[in-house]
Every structure is written in C-alpha cells, then in structure tokens.
Length: 480
Image (cartoon, rainbow, N blue to C red):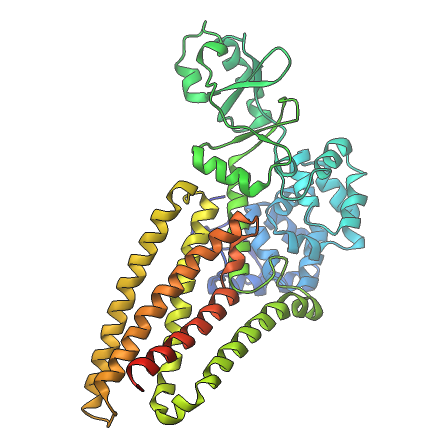
C-alpha cells in the first residue's frame, strides 16, 4: 500500500488539546506525534472512552494502527477493546502479525470473532495466520465462512494456495465482449479491482486470459475465444510464493492465476499479495545475510533469541579461529618483520567486503530471476574482470601510500613491501569476489536458499583466504 510521507488525520478538540496524527513513514517515528500520544494516554488513563472512540472513528485506519503500535502494550489492549467493529476491522487488517498477537488475549476473543466475521474469507484467513495456532483454530471454527477459511489454511505455508484470492472474473470462451463487460460491471463491488478476465473451456479449465484494456477495445460482438491470450502464465496451488513472484516479474504480469491438478481455475495471486511476498522475501534475505534466523521477531524471548543467533555466531567463531590458526602458522615471518601484522586487518577487510558485495548481487539476481543459466559464465567473467580492476586500483593506492609513509617512517625494503601488499590486495579481492559470486549460484543449484551464502559464511571463508594469500605473497616478495 502506498503511504504518503505525511498525512493529517481529522482532528477533534479535546480539553487543552488539539489532537491530530501525522502519518509516519516506515520504521520512523515523528516527534510531531509525541503530544498526540501524551494526550491519548491521558484520555485512556482517565477512562474517556466515548470521546476517544468518536475521535478515532474519523481517523484513517492506518493512523489508528500506527497509534496502537506506539502506545504501551497495556494501553493498546485497553484502547482496542474500546473500539467498535468499525474501524477495528480495517485497523486489524493493517496491523503486522506480531502486533495482532500481542493485542490478542482472552478478554478480546469475542470481539475478534465479530471483527473477522465482517471480513472477506481471504482477509480473515490471512489475519488468522498471524495468530498462535490454537487461537486461530478456535476463531476459525466460529466464522460464518468456516469451510473456505479452513480450506485455505489446509494449503502449505508460503504456497500459492495459501495466499491466493478466490474472487475473480472467469467466463466461458463462447461469451461475447459485451456480455463480459456487463459481468465485470456486475462483479465490480464484489471484486473491487479487475485487471484480467480469465477464459474457461467447457470443463472449467483455464484456457486463456484477456487484459481489461484489450477487452474494452474489442468489438462488442466478438467472442472471448477470438481475442484471448493463449500464451498465459498459471501456477499450481502448491507453488512456492517466491517462485510465483519470480514468474510474475519475469512475465511482467500484475496478477497470477492459480489452478488445481485438473487445470481448473481456483484463485489468483493479486498485486497486493505479490508486493507483500516481495517485502517478506526481502526481509528474510536481509535477516539471513545478517546471520539472523528469518523466524526472529522483535518481541522474542531471551532463549529464543539465543537459539536463533548462537549457531551463526559459533559459525563465525569457527571461521575466525581458523583464520587465527593461519596467522599463527606464520609466526616466524611475523617475528622477522612485525610490520606485516599491520596489514592483516586491511587484507581481511578487503577480502570480506569484496566477497560480500559479489554475493549480495548474486543473491539479488537469483531472487529476481535476472540470472539465467545461459548467462552464468558471462556474469562470472564480468565479476572477475571487475574484481581484478578493483583490486588493482586498491593495491596501487596502498603501494603509493606506503612509499609516501616510508619517507617519514623507517620501513625496511619499502619497495618490496609495497609490491607484496599490493599484489595481496589484487589477489584476495579477485578471489573473494569469485567465491562470493559462485557460492550463491551453487547453493541455488542444490536447492538451498542462496541468501545463506552471505554474512558469516562468505566473510569467514574470505578472511581465511585473505590471510593465507597475504602471508604467501609477503613470504615470496618481501621476506625472500
């Protein structure tokens, strides 16, 4: 959903306060709302329920959601119990799953039943996914559309069947354009937004699609079979949502039809859901690249935080220990020329950064479908040449700085040391970039999330590689 940077909700005068809310951008709190928060906290504490509810009814649901998130949990729960079904329905639809669960308690379950009953089944099922399993099951069986809600939950998590909307316009191929337009008008209030008309054969199987613009420009007497697109994309209900997003981007389509095992149309993945998938996958990749479990939440218990992060930290510890062992194996070289120790952090940093840059680009390319199997060799060649140029520039700069420093500080054999360190940077930058570019591709071929290649794995492996190459170069060109 597109949110303008600022928005002034309608305000109502309260004693000694002019209460309004400024729309807050994502992950940012505005100081302008502090006075509003203080006023609302005072009203909650004073029990001014009627006055506060009447005011919030005039606010945009997104603003009410942002207000709830900014309040203390106890106050947010109390305020939520005061809200009637409208605007609570829209507010709950905007809340992130972790906040929905925090607001959920025994005293408010009846209110949630009424709220969920007023939603479309797909919206209700989507919201229930954010609740604990036992609470979601108890609420689902009390909803009027219990069969549709529970059938949606029967699909695997993160599958097309789980996220698809069941509202769409589908007509037989013998239908005329005029009849199709009339049907779309009749269904407009139920479906809200129509981008594509789906065309079915005699057995109800999806046989083609017609974009809305093409439908409106076609002759009224023409049949859908005459104007439909037969080269369409459809996915099965068990297709992973990330694959659905990749295919939609590749084909540049706004909504993706979902079919069952017999080819019958059962739903569609809407643009809203595609945007949500993109956001979720980007967040998951960011967490993996940071060495954090994708299941991590801001309100996790201490033990859960430890279980989610400790394995990644221990992996980094193992990598650092191996790098330290490599350094220790060159103890004699360090004793001969202690100045070499000053360049170990430089080499490790360049190796880690080069590898992380290359792996991040590779992960992004795999996720968006921009890396095809036929162009892997070409992409790796580009990475190699770019890393070679970066390493050469960095090595030359380091060599020049070292030669300048040798005029001020006494350095034994500065030319040889400059040669050794510059060649080290050239080598480790190139090797680290190639490792960072190839490991995600290899993991993707093995069916493993390539985002796992970044973070501690790439950084640790390239630290080891960088230290080893540095000492080999120093031994060859400086200490020989």
